Length: 306
Image (cartoon, rainbow, N blue to C red; front, side, top):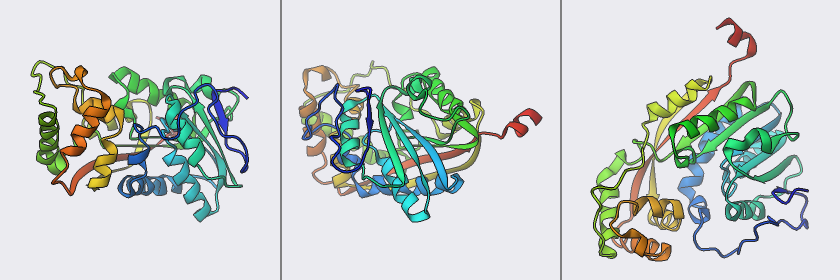
C-alpha cells in the first residue's frame, strides 16, 4: 500500500501515516474544536439531509476531511438507515489524518480510506479507487474558505463535480462567510481586540484582508461548476466557552485572528493561542452563523436538454 494512503481495516491493524508520524498529544490541531457538541451537531444535521439522496449502497468522497468528522457522521447515519458503502477522505494535513485514522470506528458495512493530498488533485489521488462513472456524493465541510483565491476554490469544486456521477450530490458548509459573525459581530470584534491587548499588540491598518465571501457568492461558485442547488440554509449556533477555547488552538484560526496585528510574527503560536483563551475570561458563549448547501449534478438527459 502507498504510504500516502491509509485503509481502515478490522481492529488490530496498525493505523499509521507512515510518511509523517505525528505525536498523538499534538496540542495545536482542529481536533478539540471538531469534538465540540455544537460543531458536531451542525454537521450532523447536514449529513442527515444529504444522506436522503444516497442509495442503499453508496460511495462518498469527503474533501478536506480533517480529523474525519464527516466520515464518522456518515457511518453513524448509515447504521441508522441500513446503508452500506465506501468513504474516501482526502486531506493535505498528515496530523489531522493521523487523528482521523485512530478515531474512526470500524464498521463492517462501511469501508473507509484516508488519503493524503490536495483537493485540487482528486482525479490523480482517486484514480483506480472509484468507478469510472463517478461517486454518489462528495462533501467539503468548513474548508472551502481556507483555499486561497477564487480560481482555486472553483478548481476544487470543479474537480469534485468531475468525480460525481449524474444525479449525485455535493454537500458544502462554512462558518466563514460574511454571515458567520452576523449573529453578534460586536462579540467577535471585542474578543479579537482583547486578545490583541493581551499581547500588547495594535492593529495594522495597512494589512491586506483575506477575502470573506458572501453566502450568495458561494452559491454562485457551486452553480458555476454545473450543479443545481436543492437545499440551502443559514443556521445560528451558540458556541460555548469550551468550543471557543477549542478553536483558539487551531493554527489556521489563530493565524487569521492575528493576521493584521503589527509585529505578530514576534509571537509564537502558543502565545497567540493563550492570548485568545485569556480574552475569554468573561465570555460564556458567542453565536456563529453557518451557511450550508446541497447541490445536485444534473442527469445526463437533463443536461442535454438544457
